[in-house]
Length: 121
Image (tube, rainbow, N blue to C red; front, side, top):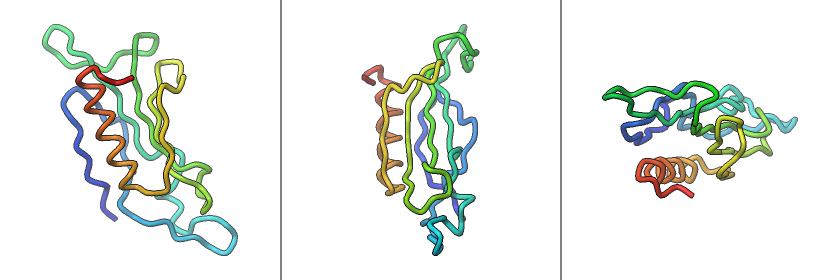
C-alpha cells in the first residue's frame, strides 16, 4: 500500500508516518481485517523552530506543537480518524474526526499552512 501523499511545508519534522491510502476492511466481529493501517499511531509531526540558522525540534518542556493522527478506537470498524494539534502537555488545541482519509489529509495540510503563517487559532 502507498502512503497518502502529503504536502508538508518546511519547518515541520515527521516523527513517523503510517498514514496509508487504503480503505478499512471490516470483519464480522466489528474489527478491521487490515487493522495495521488503522491504529492509534498513524502520523506524528512536530513544529520545528529556526535557531541561529538551524532547524531544531523543541525539547520536552519547551514550547512544542505536535500534530498527531490515529484511528480511534484502534482497529475497530466503527472507528474513525482522529487528527489533533496538541501542546507539550498534550492539551488538545484543535481536533478533527472523520472516516474519510481525504478529508483528514485536506484538514492536515490546511492546519500546517495556518501554523506556518501564524494564523492557527
